[in-house]
Structures are given as structure tokens and as C-alpha cells.
Amino acid sequence: MSLSLVTGPTTEPLTVAEVKQHLRLDSTNGEPAPTAPTVALVVAAGIVTAGAHRYVITFVTADGETEAGAVSSAVTTILATHGQVALSAIPLGGSAVTKRRIYRTAAGGTTYLLLYEITNNTATTYTDNIADGSLGAAAPSTNTTADPELVSWITAARQYCEVFTHRALITQTWKRTLAGFPDGDLWLPKPPLISISTATGLVITYYSTAGVLTTWAESLYTVEAPAGPTAAMGRVYPIYGGTYPSTQDIAQAVIAQWVAGYGAAAAVPAGIKAAMKLLIGHWWSNREAVNIGNITTELPLAVNSLLWPFKAF
Image 1 (spheres, one colour):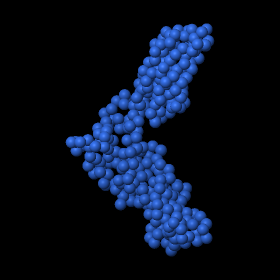
Image 2 (spheres, helix red, strand yellow):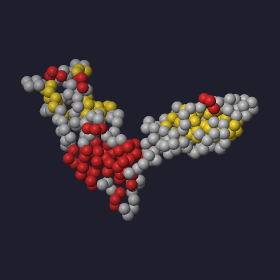
Image 3 (tube, helix red, strand yellow):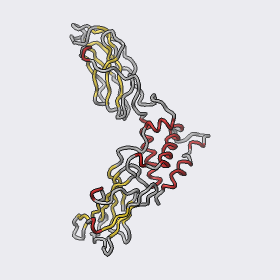
């Protein structure tokens, strides 16, 4: 028998904003703003408006954009002979960074305006040959990205709660394989069970004695899907007077796939969310696995106490 995750959740029970509120953090706790790029004049004619220019970079993640980073040194362009600017050592962001944006001042200006968007987190060079009139919006003054550590801790806290309680929190798809149908009920772990039919994601297939992969017809079995915050595992069994199909004698003769979870984040019980917040707060305050002489680095007992009522045995 094996149990495996087919499709994981696309959201988390807690948002970064909720975690920041719990930790009493402000908007400055996000992806760190980048360092300055290296800039140099190109000995060639160009259309960068004549005058002094400076550059800044921002990081872009799925959550938002950082404020403008450190300011580059100034370069003074001359259209006929030094009308382009080469940027190098453009800083790379962390794993959450998907794009970077280059902002530049107009000639002699102090406002940083959008010059170019690098749609990756790998390129480190760019040649500027854009006139002031083609510059875009001003660089943001606030950081709207999420702290990458908070994002990873939210996921880790959700996974801890799911393992401890044997539950699925946000909608996800699971698969269980068996060497044959059981003598009693076919249990579907990771409650609550959402799907109760093929239309909602429950599919039970088996290899017949002839070795043909066959779908067990819905009309031949009954599904029980307990609901509520402490719902027990779902289960499947033959209809009254019916029997399980005969299967081939192989290790993965029966395959059950279903959708589990409370649904959206709003449906996850408050007790589980509270446990996640305490766990994330613990990680925030204790950045290392071991802190000699400080017993508070152990997992807070309150976390497990909050989770025990939801444990699915």
C-alpha cells in the first residue's frame, strides 16, 4: 500500500499579511532591495538624452516589487560620442525573484523612471539606448514583496500541521494504491474528503483479473464523507448486496484518487491557523535549530495542544 500527493494546494491557510500582523511586522519586512549596478559610458553614438543619469534596480516577486535599491554612480551622456550606457553587475535576487526592473533619471533629474524590465533572474548586463521621453513610471517608494522566509515558513507550518493531524488543509489531490480491495471498508486518508463522485474528483480504478485497468462504476459503491472541523476519514464500500470487484494479483491492483481538504483558507479551522501562527512565531524568534542554554527553542507545547483535537487517527 502507498499514499502519495498528486496535486498540492495552490494557496496557504495563512497570508503573509496575517503572519506579519501576528509577528507585529511592518511593510519593510520583505525581499531586500538590491544593490547598485555598475554603469559606464559606451563610446558610440546613441539616443540617451544628453546629461547626467543615475540608475537603480528593483526586485519583482509573485507578491510585489521592492523599493528602489542603492543608487549607481552618475554618468554623463553626449549623444554624438557617448550616447549609450552599459550596465553590468546587475544584482540577482533570491529564489523568489522572477524579474528585475531598471529605473533611470532623466538628464539632470532626481526621479527614477522605468527604463527596462529584465524578465529573468539571471542576466547581469544591459545596454541603455533609450531617450528620456520613453521612460515610464516612477520607481516604487515602498516594498510590496513578502519576506521570502515568511513564505517558506507558512508552507512549512502548514505541512507540519498536516502531518501531525493526518489531515489536508487546503484543497489537494491524493492517491492510494493497494494490492487488492480490502476485506472491509476502503478508507481514504487525509480528511476531510471533498470528492464523492467522479465529477468531483473521486476515481477508483483496478486491474481486472485479465489485467485490464477498469474504473469501478459509481453506482456499485457507497461513499461516506464526514464533514466538519474534526471530520473522520472518508470511506468507500460496495452497495448493499454488492461486492468488491476481483483484481489481478499485483502490487498496485487498486488505485483510489480523491480530493481532500477544508477548501479555501477561510474554511480551515481557527485552531489550526492559531497553531501555524505560533509555530511561525517560534521560528521567527529562534533562527537556529539549537540555542545552547535556552530551552525556549523547543517546539512550543501550545502548538501541539491546539492541534490535538483535529488529529485524525
